[in-house]
Image (cartoon, rainbow, N blue to C red; front, top):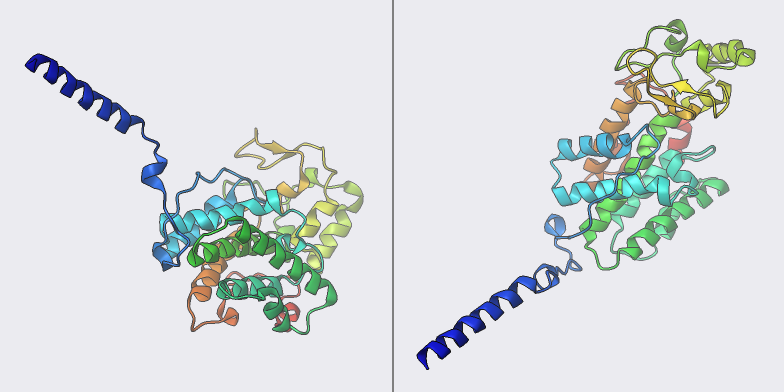
Length: 321
């Protein structure tokens, strides 16, 4: 009798252990982050997939964002939110012109709009408030900023009940992508790029190489650079057509080639590398100032004087905000 009871007890213990081991993980990991906990809100999400933005390879996400994360000592969660929205722009929002600083976009107004959007999280009519703050915008840019705000709001809505802080860091990520594309596409090509033409590429510096360009317009291209009329986005218009094989670096990485002209110079962080340095530092300034309620968008430093860079119509664009 005693033996039978002992057996029953042992069986009951084993059953309990088995049930505990197979119990769904969800029972232990459900976290409600719908409340606003500031910087300590908790989220459990799948790892962010590796996506290649416009700067060559994953520089938006893994270099630009990581620089901001390190400089501002962001938490792992904050960093993942920043990278998430920064990296999805090219995959989910390719048609939103302002995100990519396409032609005629007032990118300064676009960055200001995202600065304000982050500050307005938790309020209604954000887009209307933003547009009313910039009454001198052209009709085109009203459309561009409206489309961008709608895209951001749509993405935030799709995340459902996430915290206010989580939403703000997603907006910062969108802004960092825009900031990165500004320095990739809208920096004036320096005259020294002509005087240094054909120099041997190094691991940290890319120079113009004759083999990449159409011979019929090469002289015109050089002259326009010298006269200050060429910006980084214009370079590919004078290069050989898409489909030709271009070497990304002529001596350091002979095996690395591309058939996309834009990757050779415009989106290459080693071509006029101070562009990317400025983009990273300006990104830190943006996030630092938007998080400080005593600062406004005009406090954001674009580091143009520090690196002797000229952005397309910067002063003109700045005047409307």
